[in-house]
Image 1: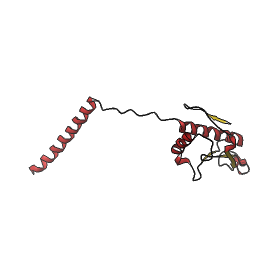
Image 2: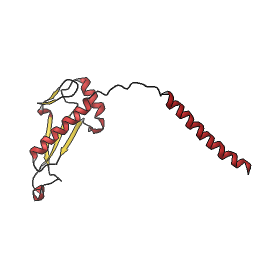
Image 3: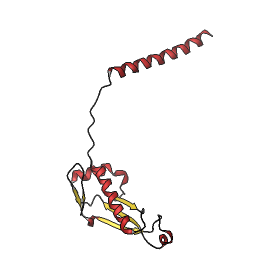
Image 4: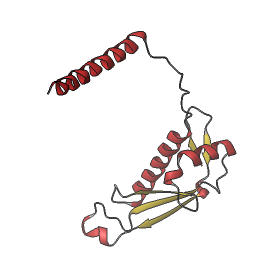
Length: 142
């Protein structure tokens, strides 16, 4: 059981929801890299998950660019030379991904521009206008 904690209550996902496979790695390994399947590929189907609906809809919105057509998140790791460390790395990446996606964004409070910033903007606009007027007046003299 994988437990993911963030500012909202902890979410637990059963390891049976994950599909793990191993393929040949392009990472470190020397001559061994051509013989051993050390790259870990983790697949998790968001649509088939046992998550609460509000959390699932938030994850769908946040992770939409990382989902496959079937609704799966695919995470790969080939940082290490052995399967076990790559598998653990995949689980860590998955936890970080879900923690980031589960955080509720802070609501933005509308603010008004300060008096001095409004004044500076108007001064810059008038200076720009003066510059343009000076350019056009010299052409009319010709």
